[in-house]
Length: 367
Image 1 (cartoon, helix red, strand yellow):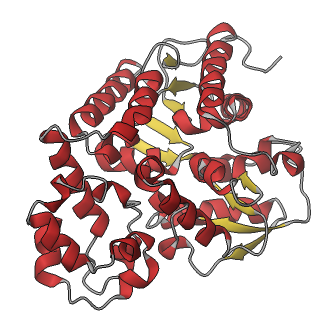
Image 2 (image 1 turned 90 degrees about the vertical axis):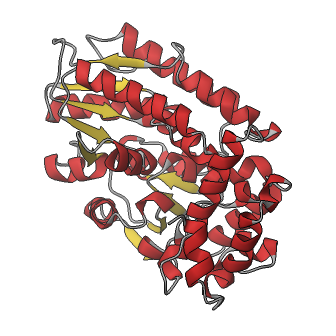
């Protein structure tokens, strides 16, 4: 049974999800009314509607029947792709991004510097690589010190293609990543991005996926990690919603460094989207902006997160840091005020990271 059929059958129009979802407020209806329109094919005439959902899964968490509007919107997106109606014109930027992160300008696979294969690889993902090549290099040097025989792969897990509803492109990207890991004889993949963590645990279960934050807790913080008295409002990314071990390892790391956490009302399994989920930014900037503001207004302190996309999105409205900044960036008190990067800067950073790794295979330290 499709999610649309489930919603038509089981939605009691109680309004619980409507109270918290800016997307539903904008459509002015209940999930059942939306499903009735989707079943009638209305979204073919208004394709921006299914692309205006964050796919954040909060509706499922709140719904007494565990119904998921995002899953229904994703079904509609896939149908729009199959019928040649989507991608929509604004999605050209996502397509360009996908072409870039799968090109030789960024893609790279390196086993341990002294070997041709490796037991595990670090997969920073395209978002963290665009956010800070310096962080990626420092994290990888740290992993080489604590976990010998660790390689690194630069690439994309395919999340943007999946969120577009382009299942064919997503499968191709996932197949490429799996093939690379098999060639490198990888048994374990260490993931920095919650979106990558979600996708690989769901669709590449033959490999053992470990979050970077769980790995750091197991092997210990780097020597000389700076500790300061500071309180942060912690934002959990959407894709970490039901990953309790990931959530708790991040919190344990933060507290181990001596920082204090404000748990916002909507956190952990009830977390709200940062505003970029589901590629909403591209089809409805005003809706995305409202979602960002709604999230940042919950926070009493500077925001802290463990997703670089969330960091860049929330930084539009409020000082925000990535957890890795606290560990590996001594200038974080200044950088927490940095505005989000432009797309061109992210690409420059991704290309720089590949260059640093390719040219400094024997000495992976920044000059």
